[in-house]
Image 1 (spheres, rainbow, N blue to C red):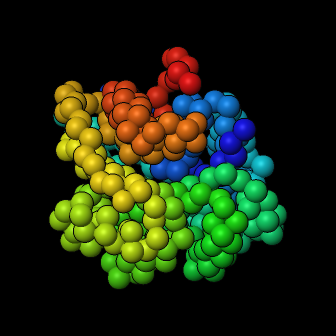
Image 2 (tube, rainbow, N blue to C red):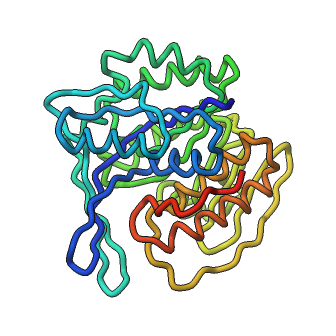
Length: 303
């Protein structure tokens, strides 16, 4: 059985539905964990975060468990609450507002389970996190986390990283670049989007992204190019996977997260990179036809 640890922040989600807001839960790495588990049901998936002890934190824990995701390493802080975001639609144009400044997840890798997490995750097969995970953490928490994944990687644990860039989470672009530069040197599987690379680094082509990641030591690079094709690098080979455009999209929330989850799940099952990309694109194309981060589980995703 594959053991996967996904680290980050799960938030309270409100979706605009004809001026009536539907409450659910979501968050970039949490979304990834859900779709990873749905794609590879036999995997042992742990979500690592920090929550409060309020009613919504308890509901969130129940929601996580309903996704068949384990919470062995979730700590709770009495005077903190989860972050919150609202998805609004104006003539089908999506906008998202966030409230997360005092989120409990900002205490990641500072809580009482730090030693346990730092020791037991060394026995996992894969650890996944994103730049959003790093951005919400304190400097001390990030340093604790970096020490852990450096040791884990040296012991053979695969480290996967999505460097998604959200400017509002940083004091400056320079701070974002500094954190990114640290993280990329600890990862094996690199899952950027070309749009984020352009915004943060002014990288205008996939070749530049691949060369930078190769130099940092990444061995498996999958570049999501929006409506354009997927480009990947593996074992000194670069290839483009053709994709079809999708019309009448309902909500792009979780498109990249579901792609990452399905891709990593397929790779853990021993599938080729090309088959894994096609599986991931197919799932993402379904997810964007529903409002909110987590689409209804209407069927079992074929193993």
